[in-house]
Length: 151
Image (cartoon, rainbow, N blue to C red; front, top):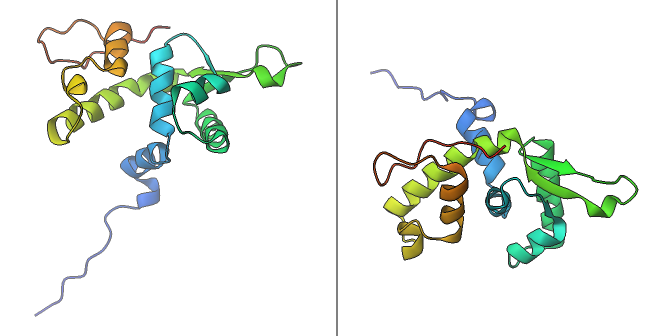
């Protein structure tokens, strides 16, 4: 009898799913992206994030913003180079493409996890704004897939 040898079928460091998980895995990353989606065409300052995301550590926020900027998910805007402390952030084109991912993850969570009733009813703050700013009217009540970006 021959033994079956298990070999890895995927090189995880090159796997698209692993790369996606590595992007969103660090704590507070999704919250930052969600707040920028809610902001739409408006940009947010560092202090805006501190107000919107309760409990985020300033050092971690700085690290996450820098990482998302390096990866092209958000744009770092310096309105006046003489005042670098006035930096603002907004979603990049690549960041807007991420909306479909968030809506898919949200749909799965509503179906399979214990979530707030407002979330289930699409009336939580994030979904209200996402529906208003990004979703085209659906032909069926629960179709929330066709996206348009506000830029």
